[in-house]
Length: 121
Length: 107
Image 1 (tube, rainbow over the protein chains, first blue to last red):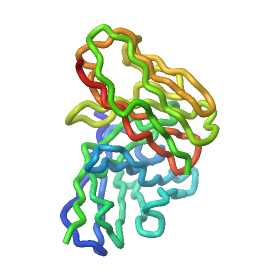
Image 2: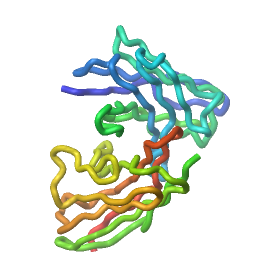
Image 3: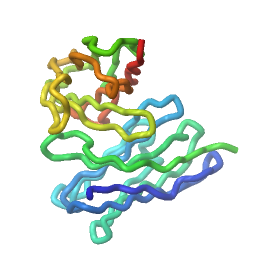
Image 4: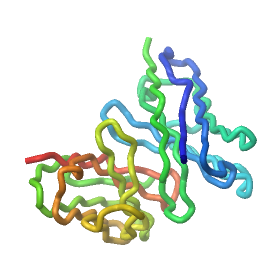
């Protein structure tokens, strides 16, 4: 079964840090670009960032709102994706989903259930 | 950044209705446009990719059209399971922005 499962969410104070992880199974993780998408309290979806695969040099891309504060990495040997979040702000409060970008669709075809991040004092 | 604007933000309709949701891009994105359906308590599901291609397993009542800056998602003959929130998303260039969503509710 194709599956993504996030972990690492929680309550953090403004200015703090948090590291999210996403465990993948059921597919060859290393072949795919992987993205983080967040769902805000208002229920909108916001793309956070992407990491390409090894064949494309693990290039990363980020949303303007998180660039310089968030960092995406991956461990293909463990089929795991990470999101390091620093200098967190109240507006980063959201459910964070890891997603797989499908090659044929150029769309996010697999989503994890998400992990909640709350930034509050 | 490319801004994606959906209209309407919410829509009330009845079973059997034909509904259309519009998504406008702030610049030309050719046909790099995807549509997702999100039901309460579930993760988003791809319905349409490349503006008009229907994902495998998606009912034929769903269709997409458009190119450039204006796109539409049409549901022909609403079914009870179609009441959900719909999002467009551009895959033309980073950052890969989403529309704000259209909530489809029962009239």
